[in-house]
Length: 269
Image (tube, rainbow, N blue to C red; front, side):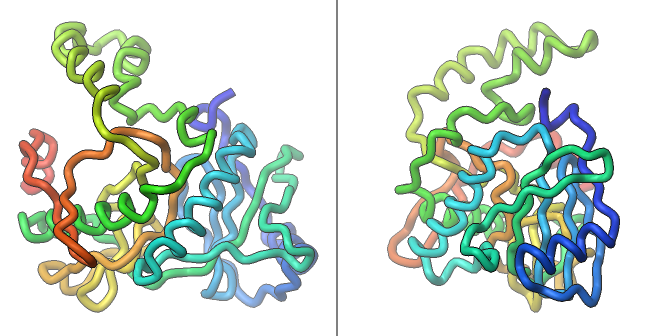
């Protein structure tokens, strides 16, 4: 059973209200449903996000995500990351039953402000700023260790190319063969736990600053003046090669200039 094939959980408002009251002692006044490809997310009272993991999710992975956020906040106090809200009993993960009676792990995190960057013009300056935010998170996680980080099966992990391509009859075997040496070389690169999902749908901005990484809000204002500031979610964090960023000294990061893939040209329009 995989989180990418198992149906995402679903909770009715009554179940959400009961979970918040019983586990966190919070009375719900508003609920806003948020998009997610494999989990169930809702914003509660405009201040928290209840994240209900896919029933196929490994509890060790949830523990890793919670621990990684806490580690990043301690390693870099200037890095805006949300915090996991403890329950009244002190634990941070609560088991709930979804609409189909499946047991799911849930947690409550604080909200970072911002609107999604998807749809913005992709300038070199903008790409460098988003890359710098990813580098800042990478450095904050440099000392983080967790056994679950090296065991995740994510289809967008380049190291899984052959497995993923094998599922599709129209994949290009020649392309896979060309990339095989590069994939093998990944084992020799410096590595560590990375955010793993820095896409424009996951970049949040507010007031000309990037305020986090997730997919929870609308298009960003002041698109040409975005400056990376923080990170919201570590739902795709895993151990992988660390590449594409430079640490220029205390408080300074820059994305390294790498060859621009054809998909980026297409996205720029």
